[in-house]
Image 1 (cartoon, helix red, strand yellow):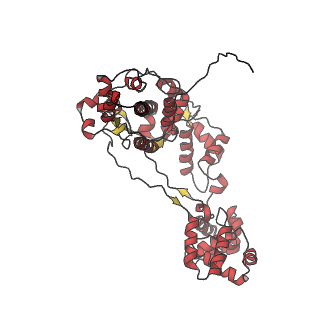
Image 2 (tube, rainbow, N blue to C red):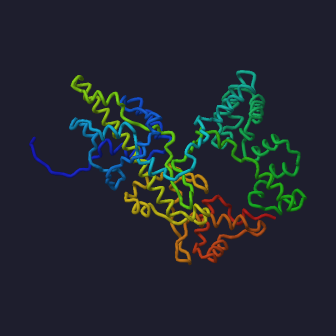
Length: 484
């Protein structure tokens, strides 16, 4: 054992900096719950009364001189409140004013001239777990009368795969349950009457036939295709179907369109899922010829330090050491939270403002005018690191005249064009979609033809790139799109 001295450099993130980074990544709805939780745990935090919010003094900015570090967290000098929390100074008038009126620069900077939906009330969807499996069990409870039938039915439900097809044969279920094959078949027929139609089928043909029966169809040719010609239908061998059913190819096409409305995977909803609730984190609107940005903090209550506890700290000679220590810690946490909320608001506003500045043509005319943009393009102008912009845009949405978009949607690579300016990859995808939407169904465009048409418009796109974008958009290949 021995003693030695070492000199080393380390990067240590303070609790406040860690909190600031976490809050920067939070969407508005998540931040609301964090603020509510902090108010429950910290007695020094309280909501600013409405009268104070409407006070004329509340329009003053208290940002001060802030220095922005590369990770997007301000590195300003310790505030009066922070020094108080460390027991270094006494309260003064400026510090009291800051926490009495709860003013922030949002009032004057973020919403100036914005006449958008400040009080717009978005329909809230309450997240809840929805399971089709539980619905199938409910239908089974109602559909069978005996305990034996219920046991067989549960065996079938337990064997369903992710697509809703049986994972066990009727013979296997009969052997496991010790029941006659006729009884097991009867219970399976009951399950075939459940919703969604097609659940419990043994193959695709039976799945579609169950849906045919549920739909009340009375078309022998449609039933014939479902039972005997699915392979020909898959590969669009309409001539074979036409000869077998003795109908025209045009009639085969109509029947194929009808089959396409059926659900080949009825169990795709068997897995539980949560309703998604998306609320805009920012609003963009054109006012008097200029694009205005408003950060959405409608659900986040404005906070201040409780005057009651501030007075206790002013007269701390009447308090014991443990109480003073507790109040100082709570004060430090409260000040950090208030400043980090303001920090997040500023960063979100500045990043969104710059995105709007670079994507004005998109806001005016739609996705075909979306410009290629990188995180670095915004980070350099805003004066933060790329990782900060990445944290801001992920999971946050902006409400624009063109619709509701995630902020990261505006970032995409560029493709070379003859005009000299690059074209956004998302714009090219929209062009591909438009060209295929307008094609002649009897003579669908090949990937090479789409590539040639885009090049004629001044966008240099290779055939394989068109194929990749077509896959992303969920568009079938040329042979699968052809109609007769």
